[in-house]
Amino acid sequence: MILLPNILYEAIPYQSYKLINNKEILPFEKVWIVNYINPDFTPAYIVRGDAYFTNKDYIEALQDYTTAIEQQPNNAEIYYKRGLTYNYLKDFYPTAINDFKQATDLNNNIANFWAEYSYALKFSHYGADEMLAKAIAINPQYKNFNHTEQEVSYL
Image (cartoon, rainbow, N blue to C red; front, side, top):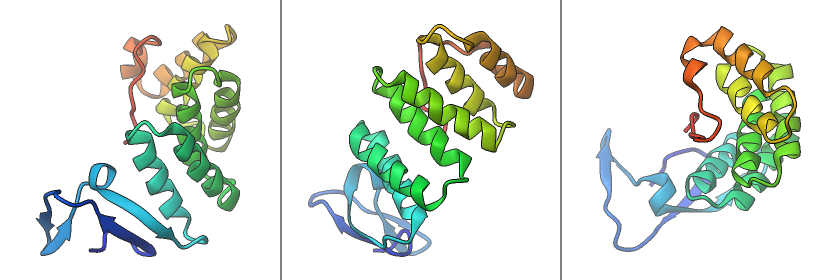
C-alpha cells in the first residue's frame, strides 16, 4: 500500500479498502497509522499533522507542523495550519496570533490566513476587525465569517 513516498503505513484490522487507479487506498485520517517518516521529507510531516488535526489530536499535530516549519521556515501554509491548531486549543491564542502573523507576512493574499488571524485576535481584543476586513477584500465570501463558529477550511 503506497499513498505517499517515504511513508510506511500499517492498516488497522477490519477496515475496508478502496481501489483507486488499481491501487488499494484507505482513508488516511481514519485507517492508517504512520510508522516511519523520512526525517528530511517535509510533506510527510504536513500530511501526518493534517491527519492528527482531523482526529483532534492537536498536540501531535503541533509537533509535526513545528518540525515542518523547522525544515521549511518560509512556508506560509504550515504557519497557518499550526496557528489554526493553536486556535482549536483555545488557551493558545497569543501563539496562534504569532503564527498567523508569520503566515500573512509570507503570503498576504490568502483570505483564510486573514480570517483565522482575525478569529485569534478577537480573543485578545486587538485588531480582529482589521484582519477580517483584509480577508473580505481578498475574498468577499468572508463577509459572513462567524468568529464563534470556527470551521476547518484547509482540509
